[in-house]
Image (cartoon, rainbow over all chains, first blue to last red; front, side, top):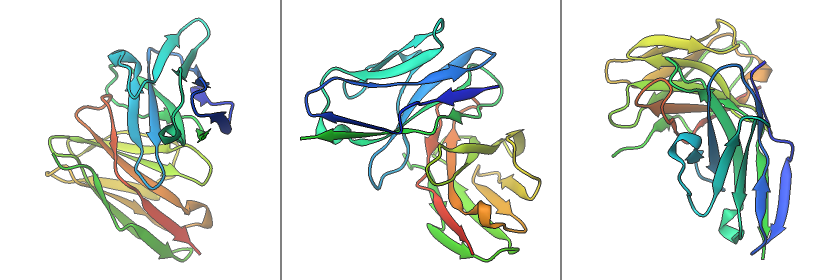
Length: 111
Length: 112
């Protein structure tokens, strides 16, 4: 079954601490992985996608096909990083792009 | 560049009624996808439209239907509303079926 698992509902860290949001997936094709973020009272927006290999707002994510993981990391958390984070996947290059989302992790960065 | 817009923002209906939600895609995008997000869950794929044709469907019953218009705006119609249909409905547009999807703010539907 195609599935995205985010094991933590809530992750709470102090400002300046490292952050790792976990994402594991189960997919039979060639997945393209994404991280979406939703700040308070804002729409869901793309944070980064694997194929771009960009670092956005200091966040990075590495696709580990052996462990089927795409964990999101940031070395020093900021209070403005507090938000809901969703990991998602789609079939890379496929004709249709239904995103499969995890249930999300709420990141809370304390001062 | 205009982002994805959705209307209405909120909607309250009673069980058994029908509802139509609307979405305007981002300028230049020809693909629209609809998602249902129940409380505490991630968005769940309903269907996708590409150049006015349905281009994939998730595990939703036929009473969930849609349309895409020549200007690439879209509608989601839900018939015979059930209490479990209460959710945030998200529309996302993209330049191709599998390309990055840009989301609208959503329509909050409450079914009483």
